[in-house]
Amino acid sequence: MTTKELLLRAEDAAGSDRARCIQCLQMNGNLLARMSTTLRSDREVVLAAVCQCGAALEYATEDLRRDRSLALEAVRQNGCALEVLTAWQGDRGLVLAAVAENGNALEFAEAMLRGDRDFVLEALRQTAAAAPAVAFVAEELLKDSSFVLEAVRMNPWTIGYLPADFQRHPEIVQEAVKRNGRRWNPLHPNCKASGRTTWARRYEGAA
Image 1 (cartoon, helix red, strand yellow):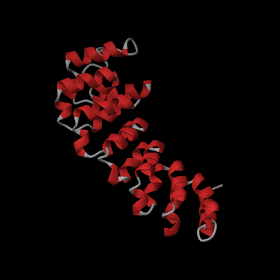
Image 2 (cartoon, one colour):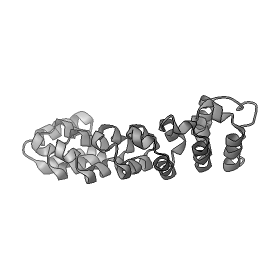
Image 3 (tube, helix red, strand yellow):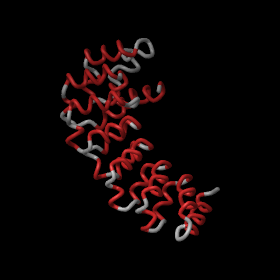
Image 4 (tube, helix red, strand yellow):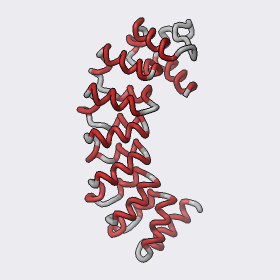
């Protein structure tokens, strides 16, 4: 069924057939945006939308957008749904769940959390995408060599998303090589002092 057909079906059902609306939302959660206030304030209807598309929670009524359990379902479905869940961007547990699903969700956390060393390290431990996620860490943490070293210990590919000075720092490079074994050698002339772009491409190619 095409998106247009789904939309027509949902709009046809919106005023009378709640069950049919739920079926439509299970196929395309964003259709919630086109439904009545009554449906957008119905928790079961909204849950159906969120389980298919986390960001669809944006279209729910305010009281449901502030429902933490719905917000948690949203970020578990799509971590980057955190971008539209502004009320929850400072909630440590919810942000951790978002980052666990998608490391890039760290970009949408409140500045206070992105600058909290312990929180950021915990977030990086919970995501398979710790390397690109480190790009969203607060600037002051990226100037802290002990933090950077710990991040590289957790995921050697992190080095590709660090400031250039750390990409050439002997101790940091040595740690990255040690942690990654023989998969690549950043001391090879083609990689040496090559900057973030090449490191990131090598990470993406190996992921």
